[in-house]
Length: 254
Ligand SMILES: [Ca+2]
Image 1 (cartoon, protein in one colour):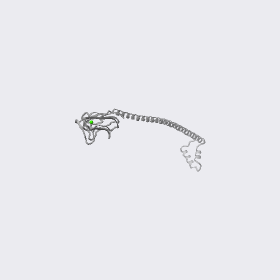
Image 2: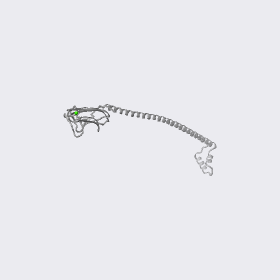
Image 3: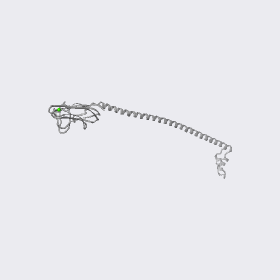
Image 4: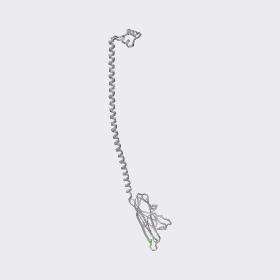
């Protein structure tokens, strides 16, 4: 190998670049012997081949990596699809459970209502009470207040007003009985709200000294319906703690 160094190299340089004409390649070639030039070219070509092989290997590696990534994505998509199906199935089961729960709650409410109402006991019985003697006659129709309460299970009868108020819808049995002096007219009405349902009466007579009468019947009531007894104007009944009474009880629910 021909080496250029020291002062000789500097001189070669000066000669090379001070010479007029000629390309850089031809100038370099003039400085390097033919064998050295061919050797360098072979080395460069070798590097070039290695570079190409390296690039090709990188591209192949990249392709493999891309294919691997695609396979991974496909797996994820399949897994996602399976999870979506499972989620739909769970959602359907949840909706079914909610429907069943709602139905169960409604049934519980119905049963609770049934138990509450079927457990309702309504029984009352009361007499006029007060001072023994005739009650009436008055100038106007009067609602009688039976103040002597014998029983009032369920507190549906109000002993301050004389009015019974149905706590639940159902069929009820009511009765009213009176005792009266025979010399004056006796009369009672039994009302359901504003409608007369029953009455009982006795005409005045000079031949009998006392009368007893009454009436009874079944009434179908809605919750809140009111039942009470009225004494018409110019009539009377006898008041004490036993003889003139107003009673009722719930027979069954409707
Ligand atoms: Ca009579």
